[in-house]
Image (cartoon, one colour):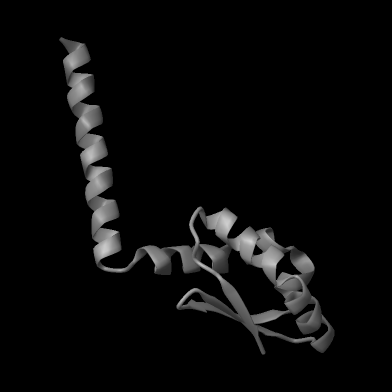
Length: 103
């Protein structure tokens, strides 16, 4: 009988998870949550040097907007755009970024 309680509990937990996921998608919060995760974990994603020299970071319509303090770093980031896009997407577990724009 306790096995039935566990089964009901697990199916209810899955239903709640599905409900929350559905609500986040319908309110378009999934991308905002991923953007927040990228902001909070930027140093872990790209490393200390890049993170220290990044002033602003935002994601809008699958474009990662960065403001960096160094022209040399700006050039380097453009050169490694595909790698950074892959790292960001892999880190959050979804395709949130396709391009990078750097100021």
